[in-house]
Image (cartoon, rainbow, N blue to C red; front, top):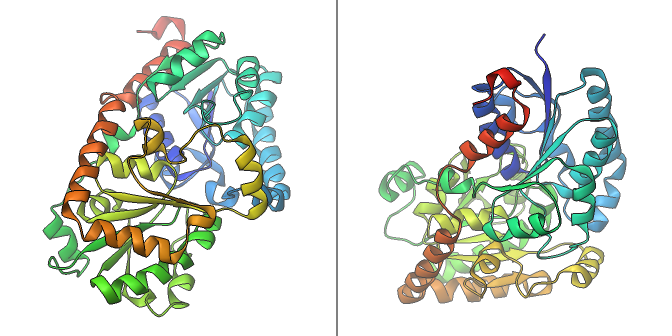
Length: 383
């Protein structure tokens, strides 16, 4: 029986990175992988103790409601850790869960590599103390994160952003839209309501109301890519409940051709905004949580922007419709303004190209795998 390693990610973007990372590490280290993740990690050979969709919460009140499940999964992972005694653990993003798990792993003598830093520079900077006490190495994806950890005495490597390698359009707009049975002559808008079911509950009904108005005034065609952490049938009830729903095309496993073929996207704040930026897709960023969560976040957030695109740019490159500003009328207004102005879309694309340049060079996953191999390969096999 091979020695084992633990890998944990609770979100769509992180589990995609996890799948890629495990594939690369299998070429370097002989390990059996287990943990928490999604379809892509499972396809890479990870034994899933729990599927990531079971922990798809959003804000404070939603997290409180999900605490029993949260602790059940937490204990399930630790029982397997105690049974298998993994050589190390890779924890990817998902900080509310993974920072607690890192502490328990430290107590058990399991070294922890943390991949994709919590956004300490945006909110709750005090978490860096917990990271210093519990992790063996931080793998950062943004260059400005490295000095934060280095100055705090946390072992750190900047590896670059994995999406630089991943976000690629592989079909022409003509081919993709033809496969979706959409017309080239009419504008196409991609709607990305989020990778968690609770995000979809907050966002999709508002987006469908906006879609109905835009379809009437601008003859817009809509695409709705499904995240891997959302069950295949989860979007259907929302579409059936709205008159415009039967004209929304659900896109399976083709998010980059979807984004690359759209005239613009309406995107839930998160990793998907970076994906859209890399594909130079003009976008409007939206987000809404419960009132209780919003009240807490307003006290904690330390930056003037919410979306990763604007944070990376250091200025407002894309419109943000957050919380009470996220209404169907506001979505219609911002979308119509961009659809009616090719010049505005082109200007936004030039700014998105600047954001893409700041994300660094290709090869992030290879660099991450190389760091982990150097840390944990048997001495006689190290490069």
